[in-house]
Each structure stands twice: as structure tokens, then as C-alpha cells.
Length: 200
Image 1 (cartoon, one colour):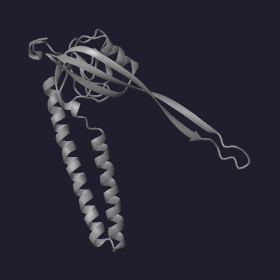
Image 2 (tube, helix red, strand yellow; image 1 turned 120 degrees about the vertical axis):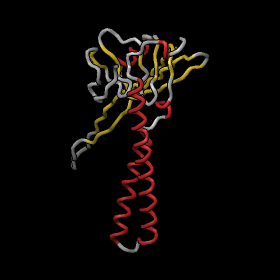
Image 3 (cartoon, helix red, strand yellow; image 1 turned 60 degrees about the vertical axis):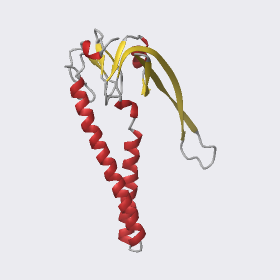
Image 4 (cartoon, one colour; image 1 turned 135 degrees about the vertical axis):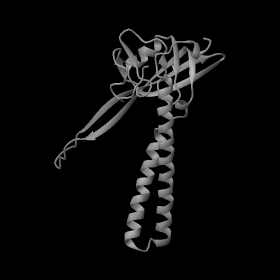
């Protein structure tokens, strides 16, 4: 494929990129604020921890800052902030089963019952050939519709700041949101799940 600018792309690349930049700046500011709160809380505990109210407030603020920073870091992916345009060269599918054990009712005179629930999580790697190189995008917790969408092949683009690579040609029935991965009917210009304007 020659150049993505020479192809008519139905996705609003400028709008999506601008929105992603604002979201990235907001996330970085939240991360800096979380680290600052964590550092100040630890310093308050170290120097004024002998006062019970300061110790309690500092401990609560430190825990909140750790949770905030952890969520921001967990949701961050460097591959989201790259671009690629080319042929889908390969798709790797991996299924993991997550088992959770639940304890049944309390029975002091007998054996307690244990229930196990299994949930299959599909993880796929989508590889886009761009010139001589190949870029990979790894998507967690997707469904079979996503697998079918990518395994059909074709020309695809990954828009800077989005999660899902999308095909350059929209199917007759529906299109994939590059931000949240929702399949939307063709008459919609905005995603029904994340409410962002996706198509031009």
C-alpha cells in the first residue's frame, strides 16, 4: 500500500487524534497529581505521624493516590500511541480461562460447598504490514466478532491514540469503533457505546 493520505478513509482521523491528545494530557496530569499526593502524604506521615488525625488523613490520601496511579498505569498502552496503515498480515488468537472459586453457604455440621466459575477471555494480536516492517497490536478481552473481523484480512489502519485497528473499507452492515471496539450500524456516525464521533 502506498500512502494512507491517498486513500479515502471514512474515519475522522483528525478528530480522533485531537481527542486522544487531550485525553493523554489529562491522564498525565492526573498521574502527576497522584504521585504528588502520594509523596506529600508520605512526608506528612513521616514528619507529623505522631498526630493521629494527620496520620489517618495521610494514610487515606496515600492509599487513594496509589489506587489512582495504578488504574492510570494499568490502562496505559504504548502501542495505542503509534500509527500503522497497511495489510493485515496475521492474527494470533489466544483463549485463557479464568477460574474463580466461590464458597457456598456456611454449614457447621457438614462439608462446605465450593462452586467454580470459569470465564474465557480472548486475547488477539493483530499484525499490520507497513512497508518492510510489521506492527503488532494486542487486544485483551475481545469477542469472536472481533476475531472474525480481523481474520477476514484486508487493508487496515491504526489511528494514533486509539486501541483497535480498523479496516479502511467499512462493511455493508456495521463498522468497528477504534476507541472502544463496539460494532455500530452503518447509519450511525458516532459510537453507540463511547458516544464519540468516529466517522466523517
